[in-house]
Amino acid sequence: MVVVLGFAEAFTIDRTRLVLGLTTTLFLLAYGAGLLLVARGLSRASSWSRGPAVFTQLIQVLMAYSFWGGSTKAVSVVLAIAAIGVLVAIFQKASTEVLRDDPSRDQPPVL
Image (cartoon, rainbow, N blue to C red):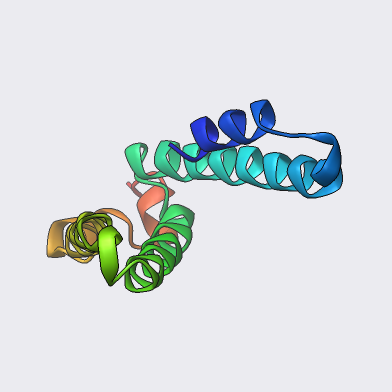
């Protein structure tokens, strides 16, 4: 989704805000690529990916709060529900066991 926003921003750049448009586009594309790496890490049960995933969802909760009020209340609710759902899934016992940083898990058994 963030990558799509990056491309959408790229197509709306005009001469009056060229630098802002370019930096926003680059930021959104880089952030989207980072999220794809985190998603890949989570799908491979890499322990490093839990921290960035939690951080991203906390940012999303704050973003949901910023949309609260007026005509964007529905957006706020959707963002908050999605972020809380992901946080609950990440902190489930099965998820924390799989994503635990345990060096002995990578070691071959001693005979």
